[in-house]
Image 1 (cartoon, rainbow, N blue to C red):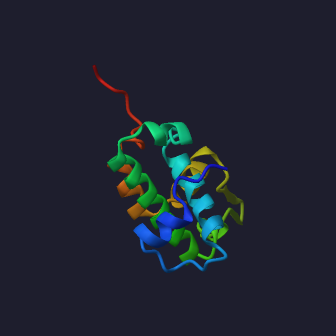
Image 2 (image 1 turned 135 degrees about the vertical axis):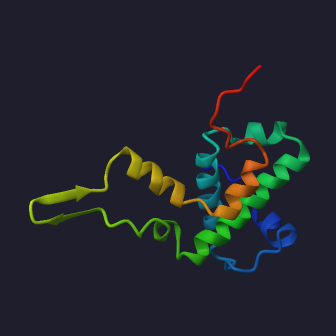
Length: 131
């Protein structure tokens, strides 16, 4: 799994303190996966090498913010545990397992602050470019 921010960046540039030494690499890998998903697969080691230094730094910063968010929530699986899944009341039943639910749950994985940083890079753009 690709990591877009490393231990050195987290500790010395971002000055992170929320994650224990033993968990830093795991949380950064999880955060990299979430940020990569939000960027629609546009993030890779190749794309990071081709970015401007400022853009790459924003990606690394967003990954660190996301790693802290994951740690605060108790891990990656603690992020979307608010969903009730499905329920039944008399003859009425509801299931929260459709496409839009999956999309909503994926969006719940990203920290709003990390997403705001990634937006500045243009990597989260979902529209059509006009020429």
